[in-house]
Image (cartoon, rainbow over all chains, first blue to last red; front, side):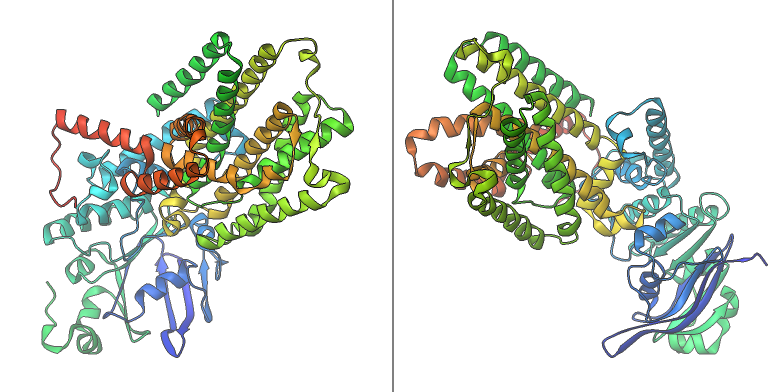
Length: 260
Length: 325
């Protein structure tokens, strides 16, 4: 077993009287894809927001690479190497696919302010490298044909891919995807799963994914964490979780316990 | 990117040639005002067009620059080539200080605070008689020694080229900012704050960069105005300048570098032509702005770019989903 990478310990958050997340703990290890699943309203997205600093937790800590990163701002989390996508598609609508991914490389292409106004060779090289890498990411995600299309004209499935491409551009160590396959048809989802499988160890170290498409989750995840009503219900290998009667009852709903 | 750069260079080159040809005092004055307004509109556009925050307080920086240049010139006897950058730097620092406080607000809150800030400065300029000479303003700001003994046309040509240099500086710095990693970060903040943050961009940093640079350029323009008109009063802080800047940026096309230049040219000429209409002038401008916002939300440049894209598409048919509603 590889050393723990991202550690979430005893995380809680309530909104008004509603306890959205209650005492959640789990790990993401180096090199694995972890699925975070559960029925609607189970608190998965809240978990994402807590880990990435969009919300601050009422209790609990987040450790990343032996560093306490609880309560950092979202941009600081990104600089630590934790980059997320959003459930409701969030991309830079006014820009093209290529420009989106290019913008995503902000951290890698960052320059001192004076360099912005008086760029030299080094800046030109960094820009060229960023452009090259952007094109490469667009290709990896299978969006080459739409490279220069405005993001506002993309179809739903393409948007989800662009969102992942944008997150990848930020060179995360942990890539956190919130329902990346929503709106993809089964063929697209399968292809997406194949791309996802190639990421750990290459473009990213680990992936944490919230997803409702069980076929995809079971196919790509090394481990699955199941949430229900803000609490952790089960954790384990996909097959193990699928067989768990508690999970079947709470999440898959009795008779529907037949994964695709 | 390349096209925009070439057009910008052409515009500046043509303006440089024009300066050698124009010899009519009135026409030269209009041309100088076009250049002056182009600097203002360009600097406002950095914030409005690229970061996406609307400032109604840009006259604060214009006034700070104008008063700084006027005071440095009359009290310290500094020459114009020092007072202009001094005005820019004071305005720039003001911008950073104001921005550090107000840019934590967004949308309408930011708009209101910036408006209030400019208004407070206007009142200060009108009442702090010991320094600003109150409503009487600072008159008789020194002209450059080079102009001594030259006729009025030569003086106008001189100011024309000073304004052109300012504009070239403004366009160069804006161009560099816009087409850099920092500029992309600013646009990311404009397009989607959450995405920007999730890829590591700190929104405040780039809002401040754009505001600071915009304030610096506006301050230099203010200093230029002080020397050119050789008078500065509290009205440099007043709303009419702001209205002109907004109209230029919106009509020309925010978020493009050429738009504000086009806007400055159009609006300055219109203002001159509509002089006969007097009070009606502002109403006509109001209607024009409403029409632009309704029918050409990206301004004239946005309109032209769309036309070009559509033509390009007509020539090279691209497979595109039909759902683009």
